[in-house]
Image (cartoon, rainbow, N blue to C red; front, side, top):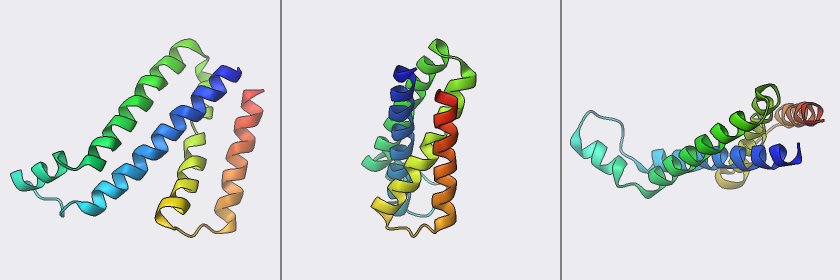
Amino acid sequence: MLRLIILAIVQSTLLAFGQVFLKIALQRMEPFAWSAHFFKSALTNWTFALSGLSFASASILWMYMIKHFPLSVAYPLGSLSYAICLVTAVIFFHETVDYTKWIGVFLIMAGCAIIAR
């Protein structure tokens, strides 16, 4: 079970950083348009590429996890990404998080701890 917990933390961290890189990429990109210029700017945006690599890595790891561990345990542990993403939003984007959101994150973590037992 410890192996699954470690894998879930790594997979959730990859998902959270994929979201961070995607947000940074979208902030740097031009407004969406069905134009070659827009798609060229998207495809040459290194943070957009890092986002894709993070999501792809998380997906490959997820496939490994659900192949080798019970889905009823692995899937709820995937919710760790919500907690990790909230922390990354505070660190990288200086977002304000009120106490009710922190309580929600605590409840998610408590639920993961119960499921992982």
